[in-house]
Image (cartoon, rainbow, N blue to C red; front, side, top):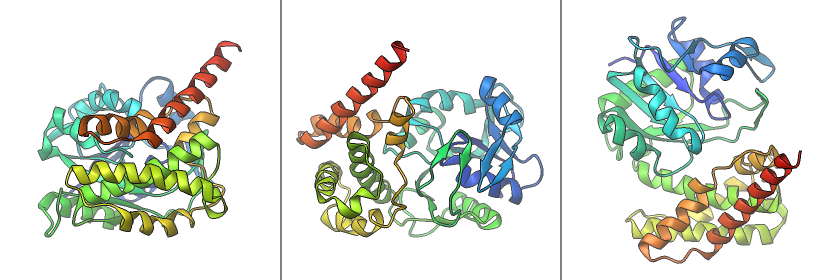
Length: 312
């Protein structure tokens, strides 16, 4: 099994981590970005600019069939996942593998419900990239894509195939022995950091100097850890402590995705973050007061943005 054709859906902050290296490492035309309508026109006419270089990637529309990808990378926002699942149908062949590198804990289940687990590997990203109006500047070697089967004591043939592709294209990666633990650890950190920054309107650098922000961040993380433990996933205080050094070494001026969305007047992924924590807490009998405040506070900020739009 060798991966020769790759389709990427979602050319945002996560998608640009892959796109230039896949285009350079694959035969011409074997890397495609999925887009249609105005987005297709914009990508064809303007492209994206990464570290000062403008790229125009080949485009494949959702309606195109008959030329399935060996690998599909889904890097869309949570609110666009259901549409993306429908859009990739023409790209899924008998042996196609799918990496859904989104931030949440339920995206793989949603994709597998449509296409089957034989097509879906677990994955998540650990990278900080800020993209604005098709422009991003970042260290391409500063982050990793994590992927694999649910457990990876030994590598399956499809994990080996993705590993070989990423080696060929120079894409930094890690294969976690326990992918669910890795996904929940990343989710726990993201809920604490992303939601707190969004509600308070602060960049990552605030965690270096403002302890009150860290108190909120850690409390939100502990609620996620309690839910994970109820589900049999071993994350807790050790992982919270491990994240301290990471969060305080992020580029201080960088802002997480939810804060970026709020500042640009867009809908956020709050449902996937604190909204999911609150819902799972209710289902499992775990109180989540911090995430409840984060959820409703960010929903109010979305409401304020909508009011501004309506008032002109």
